[in-house]
Length: 111
Length: 113
Image (tube, rainbow over all chains, first blue to last red; front, side):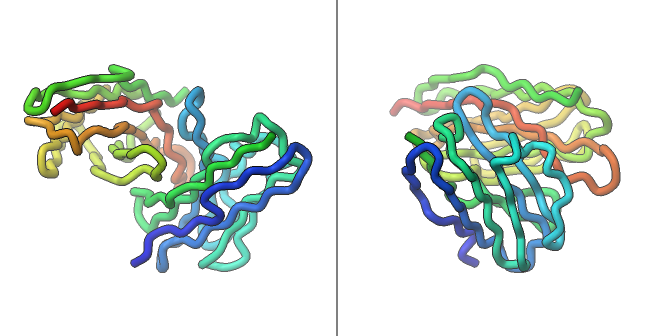
């Protein structure tokens, strides 16, 4: 299996621009998670889906963030408009049991 | 409030010098405790799941143990390739089939040759 796939790996954008991060989970996994990682706060869960349905979005920082999962093999995390404080590494993870398997992450820099 | 605290924040060892990393947790009803390894520029890599006090799991030079309040990751005769950040996370029983993990900030381990 190719594991969790994320794109792009790096994104540099200007404040106010829209950013879309993409994730392909491991085939057969029915849970998908979006995380943000910073040095100060560590790993923070933003939202997770079960069978393509959002279950807990309490970690989404504000209305500028949105996530969708249109089918079992694809999810997006969108930030509009982006701000410098959104700069972080964003991870997608998937699972079928309790352990989660992470993608390589997208390093986002907002200038 | 559910919480995970890892110590030390950073640890430097000589090759072959065994040591332990600590993960203390507070959670309402432990469903599982997870250890991950993270290399620079990569996503966390799953190592172990522990479900109940007294449980132990091993993988190569790593051994994870669990009590009712903490978990230890023992590293026996470490090698430079064991250098990484080790993350601990817990899942509480919570409501329904909650899959949310509470994460510690990690221990950064450096093993010198």
